[in-house]
View (cartoon, rainbow, N blue to C red):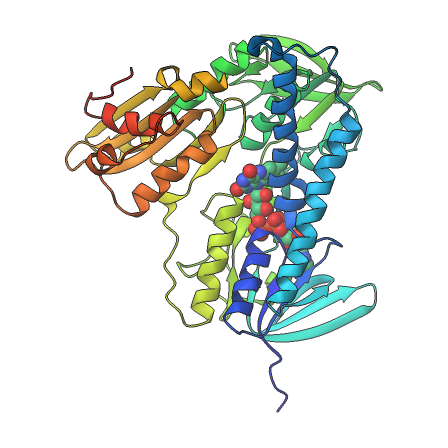
Length: 467
Ligand SMILES: Cc1cc2nc3c(=O)[nH]c(=O)nc-3n(C[C@H](O)[C@H](O)[C@H](O)COP(=O)(O)OP(=O)(O)OC[C@H]3O[C@@H](n4cnc5c(N)ncnc54)[C@H](O)[C@@H]3O)c2cc1C
């Protein structure tokens, strides 16, 4: 009988796939990773988390130059060299993509270039420039990720109608930009280009920006965006989108039913991401779908024996890089016969790198109340935090949602400076099942931003000192 060559084949090299393959290598499993693109790293590394944060970092530095007089620093005619900004971003992406290749090599993961489809019975077909080969494995992980959804009738074109892919390739700052969709991707690009000097309008169909966040967070972000002269239209519709030759024009219907023609140099469509689950051979398996996403159990197993799914293709978990990675760890641990703790959806941090930034974990106040919890809320503004004032970023607040009875921490929602870093304390506290009282005793160094988190825990019992 022919030996089964692989213990595991991973399809896709995003943060889910490459991390899973490395962990499998660490466990001594004979592993192959198949990737259809020339470069490794998937959406996150090539056209998502990393390039956006690289540009957002530059936007932050640029803002400091523009407003340097506030700190007593006089800069004569600071100039933004956007091609150079792009080059830096591309360099960061390239460095980390090469790093993934090295890590895979070190973990003895075989890298196979090509487009993979499931062929049933543990087989995977790989098509590449050199032909088609069929591989066999005891286990398969589908980590094929997602791509930008488009509005019906629209096609991205690199010049006027853009997704996250095309906008990251711009070599000049546009004069004006309309962003459709105020989820994390939409608001991050809005915040980035506004700081680079673009006139930005954000159009969102739902009643509020960042709709998955606590309502107070949405309100604060919208308030701050408007202060920064970003036009935010929520509960609004963008229709009749057409190219004019010099840009894009559309009909905006606002929340109160008023219609207006909007025009901009560029349009970014950021209305969500569809899972890459078409044309991967699902019909040859028993895998079940939920509106295009793959159904899995707590160990990331699909209904097809030996086939797992992780990351953006999975139904029911948010499309985030760290979720993809954690799901990969769970799947591989299960395959290797090690302890595999299912993901706890209430302990997944969400981070949005706007100005001000957002970091959150757990239940929103509304969700906690809807569950019938006796809720106590503690809130502390960054205006009362000396480090925030020193940094010149004192907008926003920390909000703790706790259960009245035992002081259980149900959720923490931060908007303000470095919110995406500060949320780490809340994630660790919730994972360790620390109560509000325990977190009130934790000593927070001074002067730090995370003192604001400590103060918010105290605020649950009305005991904050600096506000
Ligand atoms: C603009 C933007 C910013 C983002 N910022 C953040 C952030 O700050 N933090 C965060 O947590 N998340 C962020 N995300 C989301 C994050 O990028 C995704 O959640 C993450 O990349 C999902 O990882 P994945 O491994 O599931 O899939 P992906 O990263 O999408 O990777 C899938 C890989 O599979 C390959 N592939 C697909 N089909 C096949 C096939 N048939 N054969 C071979 N290879 C195939 C693809 O080429 C790709 O390389 C952002 C997304 C976008 C678009």
